[in-house]
Length: 186
Ligand code: HEM
Image (cartoon, rainbow, N blue to C red):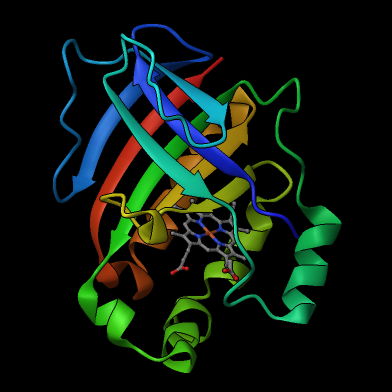
């Protein structure tokens, strides 16, 4: 699987309108100049930013770390692709996990992520309403470890909020120390 590299650029114009912005935990993002109203996902890692850019975050898709074969097969069967015409609402949620999380061994992290928090098993019922993509950012030296991307139809906003409530109440989320949520529409 080849990696998809992106740069998320926030500014005064762009593909997605930022409909809400919430610092859930930890520090927010300092904007250069005026508060951004729009977000664009550019392919690749930009070296020259648009002059109106308030901030940028880079991410890259990567291999699965925790998903087991039986889970991957189930996900592949039901998960929708990005950019469905009806999925005009969405969210970008940037997340950082604590040093304690990263100090754990792989099997300990999998146990928290799935055996105890049921991240995959309990999120499955939100498919195919919610389309998603996970970008890794930690290895790129960003202030967040992950940039998570979601797309859904406007009538599924409440369902998405329910999903967020479920995950944020999980043991996995006790290891999240920075979280920024942007609501989006196009
Ligand atoms: C739509 C339902 C969802 C499904 C089916 C789902 C599924 C998954 C799967 C399969 C992975 C593991 C990828 C791997 O093996 O490396 C994962 C990781 C992750 N998901 Fe979700 N997810 C959902 C919703 C969410 C939401 C709403 C958030 C954020 C609020 C989120 C945040 C994350 C993060 C941060 C990771 C990386 C965890 C880590 O590597 O430590 N997910 N998700």
